[in-house]
Image 1 (cartoon, rainbow, N blue to C red):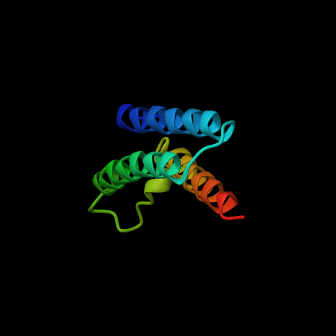
Image 2 (cartoon, helix red, strand yellow; image 1 turned 120 degrees about the horizontal axis):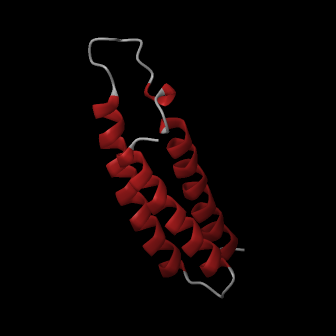
Length: 92
């Protein structure tokens, strides 16, 4: 995995750990929103990196085939879904 993607991966693992810890408590919407804000920042950082990672001279270049890209994209998706589910479960 590229160094910049490794950095994003570590941030995502930190959010996963925090969300697991919060999920074991009586968390508030604000607790989850704070994690969503962190995730939005990571998401923006990742999106900037994915654009720069593409070969502009090759229209068939798929960034998700680059080392670590698909893994980080999957981790981002899972983190977004987990936080969404945490908020949804509060509404019940």
